[in-house]
Length: 386
Image (cartoon, rainbow, N blue to C red; front, side, top):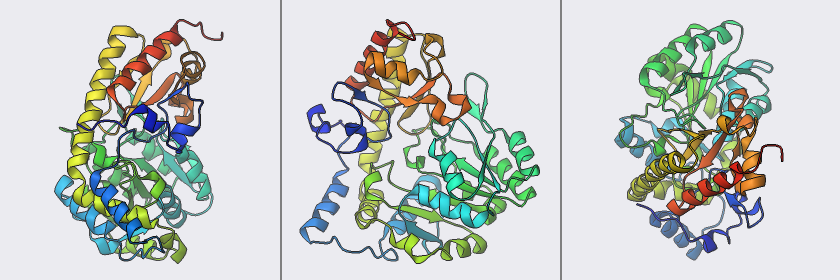
């Protein structure tokens, strides 16, 4: 198990999570971990500082792609050719630059709400038009609406922006779903950009399937966006990977302007290599803590706030809360913040399917989970609209 840093230390951090709200607010919204860095990453960064190694990145010789490829082979039996990868700043850049080259201005790009809110803006930044095909929800689990995707592509959309695993619902799409998706996309001559940033945080006993492994069609038309930033809490260090598996998509990535590659963070590349090479024991221990917090949250809600329903994730440290029975309106996070002083992620920001929901971050100490539920209980005592 990985222990969270003490609260007094966390309050000294200057990241967005700890500077957005006043000190009386418990921040559980943005996707940052409360854990110390993996020792291997700390050592790599300290050595770089000691050596004064703070110059320009050499994006063609970081070791990050090789480290991720070795990890992917061992974790998912995915054979990545590092020569078909390219570094850049972050997954958002992978998404935007890939879509710019896979689609024409004005083309429709399918997103599957409720989904990571920046997806909507990234499609527009890339010059596309958002086409929302919401996930199917039977009240117990979510899944891709493949018939809906088929209709959207038949109507003219040219790409699918896939979230795999899916943020915020924690769904790990099955190999069968992804294989069928690849066939649907191929039938329409479209493309897929697969955001796989949460893949290393797939919970134990669950099988993650990289999109580029499911079929020849997927390898031909897909680009994967990969990073260690969520697994190792490296978002501020800025490194992600374009991963391709066909000559066509490799040429697309190699056609990127040189500056897209040279914006890679030097410290991010060092940390990514260290994490995927020597930080896996830390990652396993961190996953154990996260899974324990999921179970703890379920028990705490059942005991103290049964009106709140936890949609149990199969990946990531983010959990999707159904708070509709509390009567806190479309954006229950606002009520929780105002009356419980706990900051959750705004459900409607994830798309129409987020009304009445909120996302909570469980990469924290168990006591933080208990305190969050206690604050939600206090918020329940205040009528909505008060």
